[in-house]
Length: 231
Ligand code: FPP
Image (tube, rainbow, N blue to C red):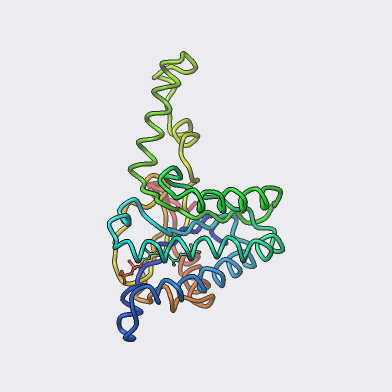
């Protein structure tokens, strides 16, 4: 079975570039080209949702120059690829702290989301200024506000209700490139039973064949979700 939701931590851009004698940001440029390839491949394979970690709440600590390059790459991607995404029937979502972004980026995001709103195919989500702790905090706050407004009661909280307040659905396959073996505040709730694949391959080298290989490995795993039988 093809995983319904694949989430990817696109790591290793900076190291990939530095090893080749280039500035770190060159890795992000090459990484953006890989985003295009992986989106197309995932869509062709019949993946329902693909979530890519583009910028974490912690990435604000990066030097301003690197942040500026990342915003400009995201902006250009959304401006240039919109036609191609529409041709592939891809829906677009951005999750994270939108109000921290500059106005021009927010506008480009809004325009891109609007132009793809009618699409019915794969849901592509970019996590931008995203952190799972922040997402959970927002969910708790929204639920508390609904309680105060008398719309719900505290005892109505359940896993299913909690999920209505979250920004993304359950992850089946989580891939992290670049050799590190941690989740780095990415989709913590949604990855509770995700199959995780950590690869040494840095994101600018991660291609369609690597994605298919990860899916093969996923298909070979037995998912028991805490029970005794494979589900
Ligand atoms: C981690 O590599 C990667 C990021 C912080 C940014 C990922 C962004 C892109 C691939 C481009 C964004 C474009 C679009 C269209 C979403 P790192 O810099 O932390 O690598 P390192 O661990 O080698 O330092």
